[in-house]
Image (cartoon, rainbow, N blue to C red; front, side, top):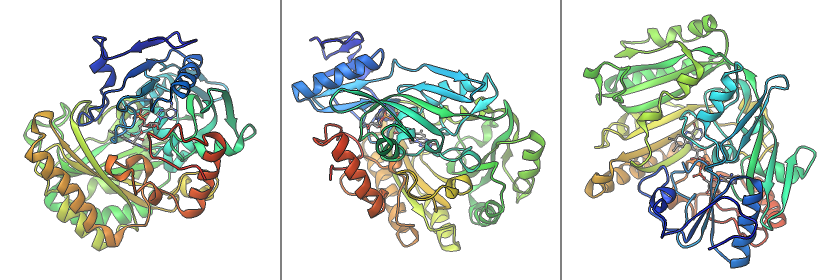
Length: 456
Ligand SMILES: Cc1cc2nc3c(=O)[nH]c(=O)nc-3n(C[C@H](O)[C@H](O)[C@H](O)COP(=O)(O)OP(=O)(O)OC[C@H]3O[C@@H](n4cnc5c(N)ncnc54)[C@H](O)[C@@H]3O)c2cc1C
């Protein structure tokens, strides 16, 4: 098989590398595309889009391949695969980075930290920049520097007709608006230009763990602690078991526990001051906060969620951390059977909430916390345990129903949410505007193997 004007690598079922090339982060996803077009650059992406449209092929677009729903790979169609396009070019004077559409956050942190710079990215280094950015982009730096989309200066986009355009505040501003939260609906982004900020390279960061029995008290304290926290302080709560990382004493591994992971985007001493009360609360099992290279902190969770394990997610925005929410969380978080399963809550606010709600397509700027319920099991456990873990995740979400804020982060939706919960991710006025931009840039809905916005 050949694609006119394509210089990358084409992978089909007959190639030895086919199974590796069709695998995504979530090992539970098992799809068999007819063709994987591993692109070398923008011209290849444009050629692959034109070919797919000519041949009327189902299109999946792969950035980091990390989305839990596995939308980066389709059955029977073509995968436009950007995983070989991972370059990051830093302009330390202008404080921007140009990042190719297949780069991972570990690539970005590695290159930008060489200059003492960073931008808001995901909390796991092997997550793709593209999918994360297009959905909004939440992470440790967001309360100080905004969402990833708030740092997006421009994007090079291959549109549904195979054309190449640049989207920015001044060029195709409607497309630029939609790219900042509307997901992969509007074209294939081959380069992101992102604003950078001075961060680290050493920051005060790390997790503190408490025993599961202390969850209610710790979360009540955490609610008040985060209400007054400086914007430099980003925190994520993790509830499940202690991950078996080499930095954690072995006798604690897999013990039911909750953790608060912190990262302070400012001077190390100011960070130490900001987390003092948190570290002193109750009786931590282990406290790993300290001066840490920012890039190392960003990679700290990588081994807890490796490629190939099986994952199933449920998520929602929360209407605050009331006592009732805390009770539901404490009651459900430790009922899963798999020791790899966990739930996580992100503390939002700060710079995220200061941007007007319709400035970008990202919904949920007013949300203070969200939760993601992550069922995890090993491939060889995918029988009865998988069913139990899935049921646990759905039951946990159901128990939170009275406390939901009425939205959900689109990037946390799983495959079985795609039919009805994408609509929940956007309030009516944002969805209508997204549908209009979709009708202009992709009227035939060629890019639909995603969290789909239908053309108006
Ligand atoms: C372990 C883990 C940790 C995470 N942590 C965070 C976090 O801290 N913050 C956060 O905000 N999110 C986080 N996420 C969610 C993450 O944002 C999504 O999974 C996101 O889709 C990952 O992007 P990707 O490029 O790897 O996705 P892929 O699976 O490659 O793609 C997902 C979809 O994005 C679109 N897409 C991908 N590449 C392109 C492109 N170049 N152009 C146009 N469309 C494209 C396509 O529609 C595709 O179907 C995390 C996910 C995981 C699994």
